[in-house]
Image (cartoon, rainbow, N blue to C red; front, side, top):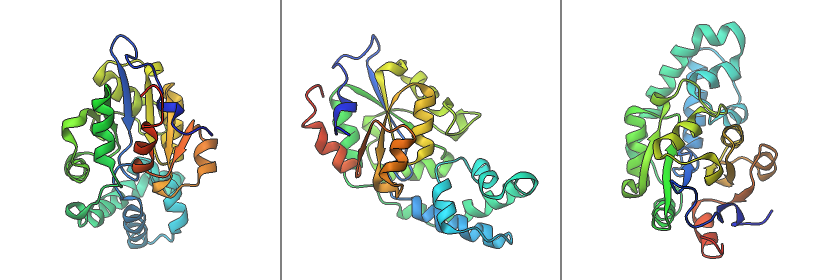
Length: 233
């Protein structure tokens, strides 16, 4: 798959410019495996044996959807709130130590400097979102954030991406969504935008491509390096 071409949109974009929408967990901040371990412990405390592999594949779903995906049916409806609360408490101990992916902040600033409107679309909210933004350390490049507090449905529904585009007034045909999970790619496809997959979240290239990725890069640093080669960026 040709690298860099998916970011090669016309310099001006549409009448309101062009947008680069980013997932955060696993894409811009190195959190996926922290989520896996803390979800595993939350399930264990609730009496459920759920494999770390299965949890990893579900990362990217909103908390309630993740519990439903992994437990299914009536058990999920009965226990979602308690398991999610346990995960939130366990994960919270890491919030002050989160680390960005390589050159995540530089990538956002480069895109903003090149005329892109950079928007975050994340299932995180509140203190967690604040911690993620501190880790990225590029608030000056971020034009808006569509968080869990702003939507009724999480990924793979289109709503998080659509809400992000509404915030900056950019049409889907002038937007790219960057994420690290199959749920991200499906959300981008459902919203009608082109999709860039990142491998730094631990999901295989083939899975991202099957879910709709137009291009796949190792991490933000790799995507940033590709921008110097893309003729229209």
